Length: 301
Image (cartoon, rainbow, N blue to C red; front, side, top):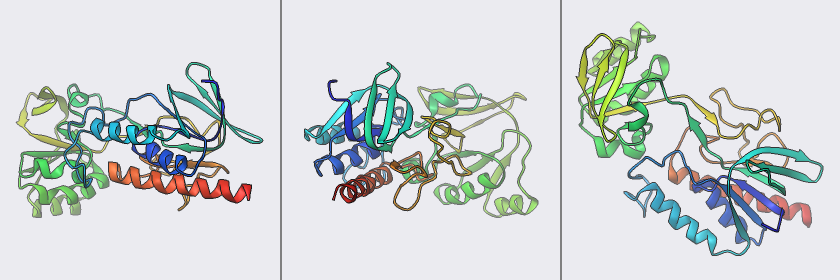
C-alpha cells in the first residue's frame, strides 16, 4: 500500500468499524480500515434482533456491509492486525503485526474484545451456537428449552431475571459453591429456578449443540442451551501505549461522544459496551464516524 497517511484509521472492520468508515468515506475523508477478518461471533450460525437482516448469518451481514463500504474510493482496507497505536505530535502512528506503519490524524478503535473461555472441555466448541451470551440476540430461538445459566453471585442473580421468562425449565449452575445471598436463593426458588452447585467436568455436545452437562462427581444433567457471562480482554492494548482508561468492567472509557480520554482517539462497538449486538455496533459506528468528521471539520475551518 503506497499511501501511509490518512485522515482516520479505523482499527476493526466488523459492524462498528464498517459503519464508521461509511460515514467518514461519504464525507470525503481519507480512511484506512485495518481488519484481520476474525470477528468474535464467527461461530454464531444466525444473527437476530436486527431488522431487515433477522436470521442472517453474521458473515452474510458483514459481507454485505463490506461490499457497500468498498464502493467508496475514499476508503481503503488493510488485511492484518494492528499491534500498537502511538500518539504523535501531529496525530497517531499505527504499527501492524507485519511491521508496517500507518499515520492518521484520528483513530477509531472498533477492535472488539476477546472472550476468555473457561477451562471446561466442550464449552468453547458450543460458544455462539448453544452456549449464548445474549437473550436478546438468541433467546427467542431457544425459548421453552431445557436452559441453564453458568454464573455466580450478583451477576448470576441479575442474569437470571432476564432469562426466567424465556423458559420454565431453568437451572443456575454456579460451578462450585454458590456466592449468592440467602435472600437471592429464596428469590430464585420463588421463580422456580433450580440452583446447582456441582463442579462441571465437561460439556457434551454434537457439533456445538449441547447434549448434557457432566459434573466432576459423575452426575450429569441434560441441557439444550446454556447462557454464560465470561470474562474478556481488549483485543488491542491501549492502556500502556496510549494511557487510555478502562472501566471497572474492562471496557474502554469514553464520553457520550465516543471520545476516549486521549485527544483524537475514539472507540465504539463491543469494546465500550456490554450491549453486544449487531444493531448497537452499527449505530455506534455511524455516530462515531459523524463525530470524528465534525471534529476534523472544526479543526480545518
